[in-house]
Amino acid sequence: MSELKRNFPPTALERKNSTETSFSQRVKDGTIKCDLKSVHSVANTMLLELNGLAARSLILQHKLIEVIKVAPRFVSEYLQVDFEQKTRERWQESIFRHVSVTHNFALLPIDEQNENIGENHKNIAKIKRKAITQ
Image 1 (cartoon, helix red, strand yellow):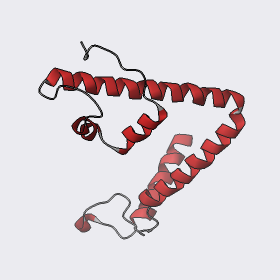
Image 2 (cartoon, one colour):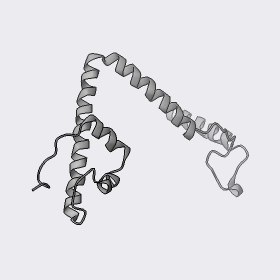
Image 3 (spheres, one colour):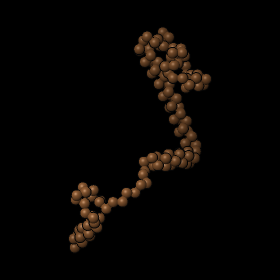
Image 4 (cartoon, helix red, strand yellow):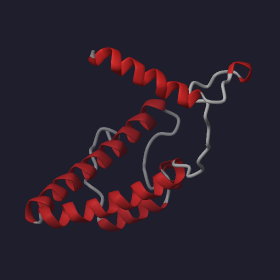
């Protein structure tokens, strides 16, 4: 009968204590009561914990929506600054500033390379453009 009884939402002190230790540690310490021999009991307790987390995140989402309704410009500017800072940090990781000079734009093998392949492309493009315009 005690397994079916729903617990009340945790108090602030209980939430503080629950974030400091893991689920398995709280089960081991006896903070969370469940039958450790029954897989279903442990699974139901885990689901109850996940449900509580989902409820708290939903409450936070609604509070965020209320804050956005009250001060949309401030929230937008704050999030934009944070986004731009994170974007700059990621750009530094993925953009390389080393320039490699090449005249081989077609990436042909070395034996087929022509010294003036860039100039040849320009000349062929000019000829094609003249043919299209005539």
